[in-house]
Image 1: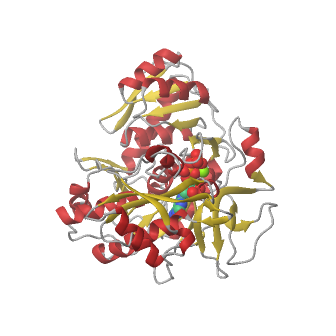
Image 2: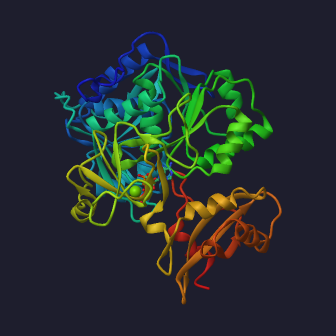
Image 3: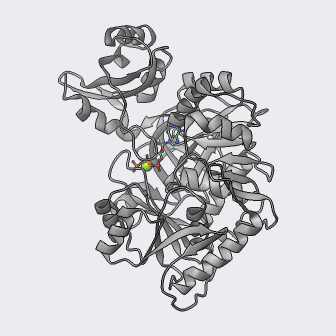
Length: 497
Ligand code: ATP
Ligand code: MG
């Protein structure tokens, strides 16, 4: 394993031969490891020249591609702090981000909202792009920079996905990133023979750590396709993709892609699912259609991504669980921070080298969630006696029917076994008698009436878990990382029953 041995990201990319590091299928552009090293040296030099210093916060607003990856690596290799932002945000949102994060520079790829936000907030901005395999960064030259390369240096500032409340900012140190990267690389035995397709955005840890850092640290190749289910399998076959990681929504869309163009001959050895619950019906359909293991993992921003994963065969992957801790201790706690026995539900807490120490500028949230190295995740789950973790929902999303806590995931899992149901999300419907009852919103892929779906649940779920309201929608709103925002659903379909 070559990930910065001292826990710093500076030497993450150790390979420097002609093996392809980054490939853009659409343009045919290939950046070899030798090219990547040159691009990084030059980019770090350019950052120094435009005045980026150790500890400076540098916002990045660019579409997935080699320029964003090289810029990110160059920023952290310079001991500055990268703050990747969603490049599809509007001008006002980006302006607010630049202020909140107190960045000293913005690197962007020319997107109009970023140009306008930089102007409005008076943050010096530079355009980045790849020219002849080198990162071009425009801007006035300043003085050179000295760096310390400390594992304790902040490497990354990221927002949580904002699924349960206003996004919190997570200060991730270089050693956190290195530990999470190593956990991913070790769990799936990644090597220089692997080729991954990057289908997740690079402004969150899922794409950045599990796809890019895990691959570049082990000498493999990152394919950067424009995501389209209709061409994905073709690209994957042509470029010898051996694995990819994504949220369940993307796996479901790629299965639809197989009905159009594939599945073709492929070299895929496993697929990873993370960041949202993987319905068992989807897991089964995916494995049957594509014929490879689909392993579910558990990650979050506060742990620089991966905390647990199902192992690859021949070890047992257990559907409905997120597997075993991967270099992270995992416990289920009661409200007083005491571990509950195996099999009992509790709030999941984690501790380990990838877990951060605090939220940025948010002492109240830090006080509530961090204690003695442990971090309370806000997820409810239970651990089996042999360490497999099942998640039942988020503390804030459990449906509380007269004190009986109902897992939205369990209700959704049942509905998703119905052949006409493409997507399902359960949420609390305010109820005078019980406090809350179960409501569901459904996206159909065949014919079914709300009444039919209610009966379907009645045959498979205990009475108290059955939905009292079934609403059919064209689509279910999701956050920027592809997660269902259950807390918004009640508002979307109207008030109480
Ligand atoms: P916020 O903290 O702002 O509400 P968020 O928790 O969605 O947003 P992230 O850090 O991107 O922000 O996501 C981490 C969360 O994603 C976990 O706490 C968990 O709820 C969920 N998650 C990750 N992997 C899985 C999984 N395999 N199954 C179910 N949930 C998962
Ligand atoms: Mg969270």
